[in-house]
Length: 397
Image (cartoon, rainbow, N blue to C red; front, side, top):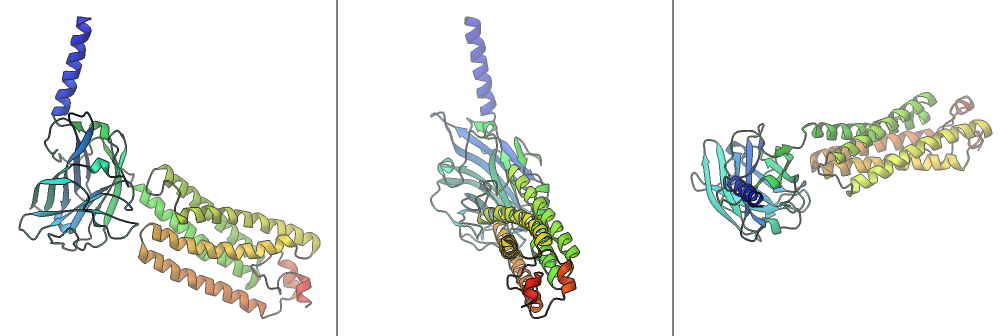
């Protein structure tokens, strides 16, 4: 019994030595040279409530910072930029609604222990008194994968003592995760960034950005180029072969793009909850596009058998154009979700041009008669709900 108690005391003593020695976690992004070291202070109440951390960003970026959570919306951010006082740094605490420029947040208790602006680096040592009480994108001190975001500016100089200084959109950003259970300490010293390695932290995989690009390219090509091309191929070029080839390519791109989106959610990045309008509409659009393909095949078989349109034909007609239009709108929503307003505007313009070309081509074909020979070979209903199409009966009117 005595031996057991002695071993237990040694074990407790060893844990206290470990924590008092300064347990901390560290994230370091080598490409941007942003560093972040964090400890959670275990006090007499037994709860690690206070955060002790050092943040370091490159001064030539203009500004840099970290924030809680996996998205800007609701994140509690600590942003550094140069002060008007030589050699000093301004620590700006901010939060954001949506993906707009973050605003100063004055409801946080914290102490700036030390700052420096030297050697091309902005550094701040900070003790946050109630960060763990922040509720929008909270900090879970018991989490082994607490999410954080980081970003640095585009290089435009920022020199101000104001918490609300204007900062331009970040040039580099990312997500990382820390094991908060490894950060507990009983010492009150601010942890120092040590080296350029991650310690009990991991960065979101770099290839996730490539997956986002792949997702956008696949769905953009499908709904802005391939689907409209397939529509025009049937009506303007009178080619059923090009029509079905283009539609199959479009469906394949849509499905692969959707699978990529699912993969991104599994990786646990910003859009993991599938609650944004872009995601919900995207699921519906891809499902309807697949249904549209089945309706097209059904119509094809019915038309070959009966020689005329059926109810399925008209559903195929109306649904096809609707899916294309909504898909284009959702492309714009996707860029807005990614906070890429410039790309969203560009996608909107390209989509408007694509709609104008598609609708103009369909309108033009309605103004000319379709020869019976062409009608007999065009066995898939075009996206034209106004007659004059591949239905021989309509050509006799």
